[in-house]
Length: 321
Image (cartoon, rainbow, N blue to C red):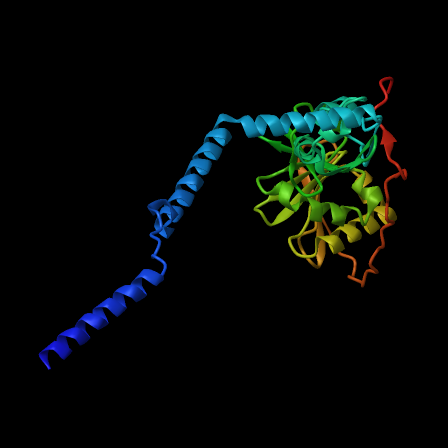
């Protein structure tokens, strides 16, 4: 029995050895093919590429190369006809031609693709008369401008100096306003802001409005008008339009403002107080005239004055204009 058991164990051991010789040996992967090594290599490669790209970007090589390519394209396009041939403008009435061309920084023959309309618009809108500008490139060879200019309304007197204001009550930054002395002078801290409303009232009686030389804002509430014959008209705070129309009717019927008057006070609703000079004396004399009954006034329609516009605008790129 002992022999049998020993023989059986040896037999099993020999059998296992014979089976092991028939199988393939397991291959061991090298370290450089492992997943950790591959991942690390990829990260290192990416980091190196990023560092190289950052250095290239910081050195300006990319920008310089792209800028050179851009100018090569622009120069090539200019040779094929993409250059400025004409500059047209609409809405230019006060802006000098030379100032406009200087702000555009554009000459005939310049590459039109190199022209930056946005930058040019900012420069043009910085001009004193320009409120808003639209600038377009009309390929291949035309630049078109549409200007919205300020409209002068009055001269604002403050501290002995005169400034030109537009219809929005904003200052027009001109150094010399001597060409606009025919405009009404407004006086008062808040006069520019309220002048447009006053001028709408005056426009209802254009003949009488033509005699107004100055308007003084009183107490930030109402206006005193000074006519060309030195008569002072004191308008009321409430409903100055009705008082202005009553004054025009009185002047038309009785030639009121042709008399030797000092002032006409329209601040009272039921009467007009007139101050005039006595003949031969410097003393003042007061007359009280009943005010005309108020009546409903029909709204006056104004004609729409559209400025002369040409379909293509005016040509400003000619050298002899």
